[in-house]
Image 1 (tube, rainbow, N blue to C red):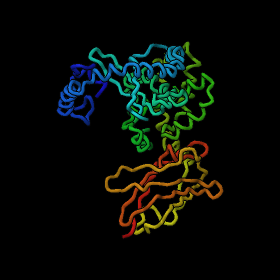
Image 2 (cartoon, rainbow, N blue to C red):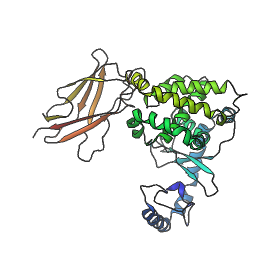
Image 3 (cartoon, rainbow, N blue to C red):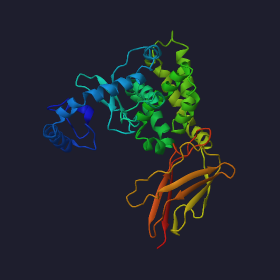
Image 4 (cartoon, rainbow, N blue to C red):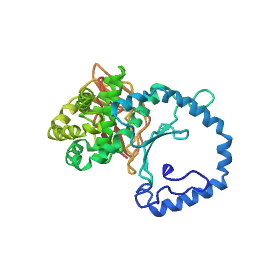
Length: 377
C-alpha cells in the first residue's frame, strides 16, 4: 500500500482503490478503512514530529546506501538496452524491514510506471546504525534496476509470449510460486532481468558471473544460460538491433523453442540437484515416531555445500516446526544429520528442505522437499 498513497499528512490513494488495488489481499473496503485509520494514527502518534527528529538518521542511512548505488554502471544500462527506461526507478531504504527486499511498481494516472527497489536493512554497526555492505546489497539493487527496462517489453508482447509462457511455467510452477512468481508473465520478466544481470556481470568481468548463473538455473529459470547466449547474440549485432526492444521478436522465438524442450531441460537440471536416497531412523510421513529420538539422518546422492545448511518452517497451521539444534553433512558418507532440540509426544511435525539451503557443491539446490512425521503418545 505504501507506494500507492500520497505523502502525509492527508494521505490519499494515488490511483483510486479497487478490489485489485493496492492489492487483492486488501480489497477496496478494507484498504479505504485502513487508510482512514492510518491518517488518524499519523496525527495521534505525532508521526511528523518523530520523522523530523530522526532526519539525521535518514540522511546518514541514505549517504551509506549511496556508496552501493555508486557502484552501478549506469552507462551500461543505456548502452545495452539502447534506450532510456520506460519507467522511473526509485530506491527506498526500509530501515524497519529487516532482511526483506521488495520490487513493487505503480502505474500513475498519466501512464508512467514507477518501479521501486525497497531495500531492507539487516546489518548494523556497534551503534545500531544500518550498514550496507556492497557485496550483500549490490546484487539486489542491480537486479531491481533492470526491471525498469524490461517489464514493459514483456507487457507489450504479452500476446506473442503467452503460449510459450504457459508451457514453460508448468514444470517449474512450484519453484516459481515459492518465490512469489505466480504466473508466466512475472516469470518471463524475472527471467529477462536475471539474464541481463548475468550479462552485466559478464561485461564487467565479475568473478560472480558463473555462480550467479548456476543460482538462477537452480531457482527454476532453467533456460538462463541459453537466454544469456541470446543476449550476447543481440549485443554482437547492434547495427541490426539498436535496442533490446527491436530484438524482442528473437526473444519470442527463443521462448517458443524453449517450450518444445522444456521437459527435457528440466530433467537435465533435476539430475544436477541433490536427491534424498534414504531416511533413518524413520521414513518420511512416519507415524508413531519415538519422541526420544534426537536426530534424523538423510542419505543424499551428492555432496552438499555446508554454507547455508538449514531447515525451514512449512507454515502449516496443523503442524509443528521441530527446532534444529545442529545440522551437519558428512561428505564421506553423504549423510545429512539434523539434530533436534526436543521432540514432544503425540505431536505432528513438519519442516521443509529449501533449494536455497540444501545445495550441491556446484550450487544446484534441492527441489523444495517437505518432511512430515508424527510422534507417538
